[in-house]
Length: 415
Image (tube, rainbow, N blue to C red; front, side, top):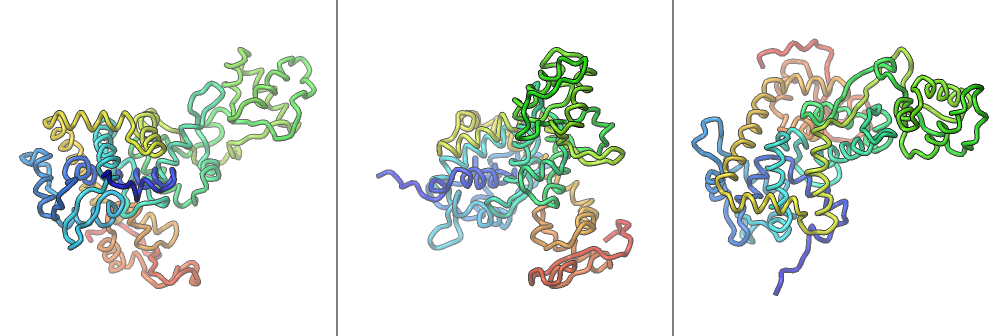
């Protein structure tokens, strides 16, 4: 009798996507799920660790083998219960039906994508849980929204951080943490610019205004520009309109100023002349990630069957063990190298985060990708951070332990 489909298969489409992409945000975990975890007989953490070494080049001196306790942490914190299950007597694990049917090919595709675009740890970010609040899911939503942000010519355009925040509904503090990480991973272009730097303002038609506006004297193109904006689902700049209509850009710019002054169109960039603001735009690599990785995961979540891209990656690695070992090793070396580099500036990273607002340890960990307890101990001992129960800026907010920045100047001591 066929095994009954439960767990992941019973979730809503968006929950299926969020839990799937959350499981793929760590490269060590992807190798485990794609190649190591058993489908039938349960194995304990030491057996899984031993099997892991056979799917990478164990002779590569740059590579450190995962320890059994690390493997158990990944299993219990993220993979169980949707993707892996623990034995009835405890202490050993295997993939669930959703694990071997969905997560395993998805993890194989994540490895193939990482070889080309960078580690999943850097792109999607660390998580110790699954669901709608994880870094991988939030970064996917950010990239999908930027992917859909195009001008009248269909090309991707910049959008202000505040406009993006309003569109996706994330807290500003959350967005300001994920955008720099996506920039570092090469997925977005994220800068602080002025209106003059942007070179072009974005406009949209004001809802409810008629398109038959009185033409600007000597500008018969007024109605054409008005219709172009009114019929466009996305904001447009003067260059995009000029290209679409075959009209000199300077004349379009004059008409847009006229329409704006008379209340027919409005600027959506949010710029105040003379002041700078943060703008973001998806990069070519970000577009590639959407097309080659995130969209196939979306399709898988809708149909509840692995997409062709996921099946192809799984089949290639299944039929070419040498290639699988080569790619697993390359991804693991890059992943571990990133963790080592991050270790050198972790104290400064925590200080920078706490300089914005008080935070709990779980929120800090979600951003920096590793348990922050020892960094916080160092910073508290050095007088750079204070620890207290209840949010320092809002004592009535919660009863947990919060950390905040003190006034003592931080100079990256040898902690």
